[in-house]
Length: 151
Image (cartoon, rainbow, N blue to C red; front, side, top):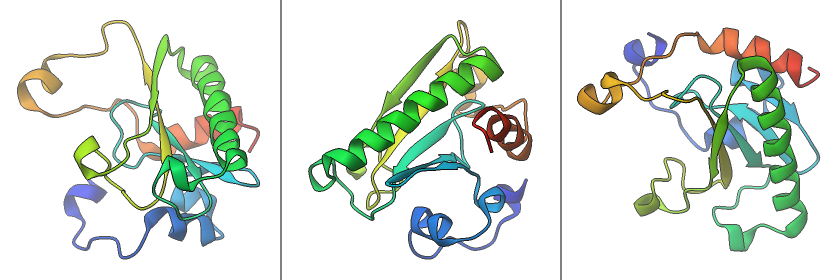
């Protein structure tokens, strides 16, 4: 409902804003490391959809260095463990959408999506109504995963 009732669009890069803030819960940051961080997707495809985001504001894989990419992938691996333990995820879609034509909603800041999946998790809402239904509020998902990730 916060999204539906919201009246203003974000200004600037939402990942840079979240990283610079001193309120991880407000910005849904689950874990920070030296070169990347884990954040819940505020507009998830499934419960527990999160992203490993490189700290530095770069928009392409070729612009990131090996250490940044390794840190982001290590966090993605930790996320899959937490999602498997907490939500009993049976599989994952993990990937990068680089560029608007590839589906990137935030083009300028490189991030890796971690989307948990379950057998039979697609339903008529997505197929017919082009809508998604989430059984849990983001703050509840945040609390559950933050505990699992040692926060």
